[in-house]
Length: 354
Image (cartoon, rainbow, N blue to C red):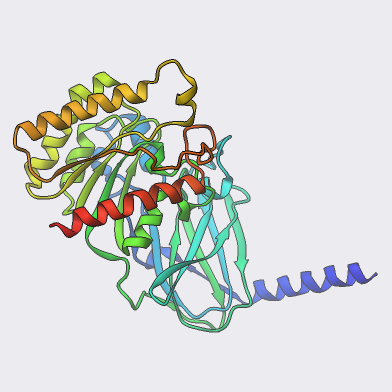
């Protein structure tokens, strides 16, 4: 009987909470992480002008919202979310919360602090991941899904609470950091959006980051280089483990030239592949061959007196214990934390030199 009573009280409290919740369309709040606002719909990464230009997989992945964040301010004591995903994607090696969930962070004493995750339940989801907080005005940042798109998202607050535009201009939006790459950059396989390494770095730098990671398709497409060159970035960072040795040899300098011709002084960074865990068990690994090809291209550029270019060797970047991946290749949260901690001081040093 006592257990039944507790269940009834819980249901009554949940019903009361829902009755007191007011939902607001998130489209009225700033959206960070887009390289262009000229997109087909609000929540996607590539401009509509690339629809007939890019390869279909790149265009489709461009509709995934990895790296996109919504900024707002509120004094609500609870937060609810209603959202509809584009694909209702599922991954066999990645948590649904990372694929199509939402992550809420609060700015506490100048540090972006994890608050809660909205769990997806279907193509259309509604959940209240946190309640019972102190009534206090907070600067908030909502990270969108890594491997799915968003059709719409609404933020629910107490009916008596305030919600509005951010009052503090953080992360900084001038001269964003632009990443290009593969599934690693897109966020595979973080357990939730905030744990992708680019999102970790966004919070560390407190600067807008543009994520142009395309799972399985970081193949140095030239139209993406042209798009990146349109952005007045503080730094361009390139990783492309999807490429073959031949593609690295044939396409890297052309991709670089597109950026450099438009952005003559912006640092351009090439990142080697980190060593996949399974590689140590193989007789030979393509990773080493790719790194040698990249080193050859980089050395050739240096021989041509190219300035402000950098090559990052990733030895030890995800640890040496073999425990940082979900499948001996894609990173877990542990892997992404290690990777971001490895990259942060290097990127910071390069930016500070400018």
